[in-house]
Image (cartoon, rainbow, N blue to C red; front, side, top):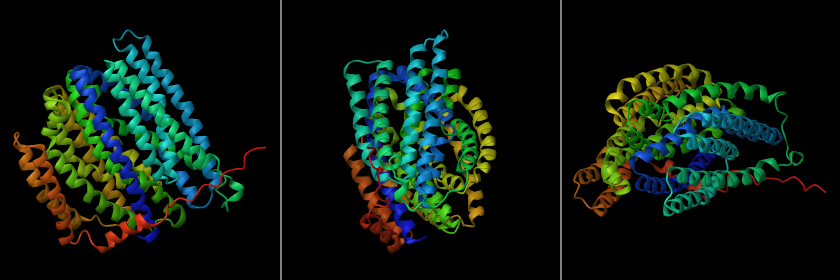
Length: 506
C-alpha cells in the first residue's frame, strides 16, 4: 500500500471514528430516554415507525448515495472536478424527486382504517428528510471531507439529544418523540447541505486542470445505481431489521421494542465498522480510477486486518457486559434486551468483514455478483424468520438476522479475495481473536456477577485494553509500520484540497 493511500485511509478513518463516537453517545442517550419514557409497548410502536422509515428509505435512495460517493471521488481523483460537480447536482435532484414521490405514496396509507394513521403520516415526512440527508452525507464522503462530517456530527448529536429530552420533559408520547426525531433530521440536513454547497456546487471548473471525462458518464452511473437499488432492496431484508415485520405479525409489541433496542445498540458498533466502508469506497474508487487494481489489493488486505483488530475485542466486551448495561440504561423491565443483543454482538465480528468487502466490489464495479448472491441470502433470511420468530420472538429474530448476515459476508469475501488475488489474513485473525478473548475475560467474569460495581468492571476494561495491545505487539500484529502510518495520518495536512469557489455573479 502506498504511503499516501495508507495515510489517507487512516486519517479518514480517524475522523469517521470521531464522528461515530459522538453519534454513539447521542444514540445511547436518546434510546435510554425513549425506553424509560415510552415503556416496552410504546417503544415497540416507535420502533415499528422507524422500521418503516428505514425500509422505505432503501427504496427512496435507489442506489444514489453509493453512486454519489463512488463517482464524485472517482472524478475528483482523476482531476475532473467539473464532471464531479455535474454528477453531484444531477443525482441530488433525482434523489429529491424520488424521495418526494415515495413519501407521498407512503402518506396515502393514512386513508386506510388503521390505528397507526398519524404515525404513518409522520413517518412519510421523516422518510423524505432521511433520504435527502443520506445523499448529502454521501456527497461529502465522496469528497473525502470526513473532517467536516465529524464536526457536523457534534452539532447534529446535540440537536438530537436536546429535541428528545425536551419532548420527554413535556410528557410527549410516541408522536411527540417522532416529531423530535424529525427535528434532529432537519438540523442534520441543513448542515450537510451547507457544506455540500460550499465544497462542490460552487467549484469553478474554469480554474481546475480538468481532465475530459467519458462522453456520457451517466450511462455508467445509471447502470451502477440500478444494480445498487436491487442490492439495497435485498439488504433491506438481510441488514435492515426486516424481522420487525414478522415480529408484528407473529409476536407482541413488547418483543418489537426489545428487538429494536438490541438492534440499535448492536448497530452502533456495526457503524464503527462502517466507518471503514465510508472511507474505503472513495479510496477504492479513486485508486481504481487512477491505476486500476494495482493498489486496491493492498488496501483490501490491510483493511481486513484492521477492521478485525478493532471490532473483535469491542464485540466480545459488549457481549460480556450486555446484561448490566441493559439494566443500567433501560431499567429492569428491558432486561430481555440482553440476550438478543449478545447474539448480535457475537456475530458482528464476522459480519463486519463485509464493510471491507462490499466497498471493494462496488468501487471496481463488480456489484452484479452481490445482486445474485444476496438474492439467495434474502430467501434464507425470510425462511429463518418464519421458522424462529413465532416461537422465540426477539431472540429468534436475532438468530435469524445474524445467520443471514454471516452467510451474506462469507461468499463475497472469498469472491473479492479471489478477484484481486489477495489471501485472507487467517493468521492475523486467529491472533486477534485469542488476544481479545484473554483481554476481555476479567471484565466478563465481573459482569457475570450482578453485584459487581460498575467501577470494578471499568477498571477491568482499562486493564484489558492494555493487555490486548500488548498481546498484539507480542504476536507481531501491531508494529512500527502500523504506528508510523498513524503518525503520518495525524501529522499530515488535510487530504482534501481547499475548494475553489466560483466568482459571485455581478
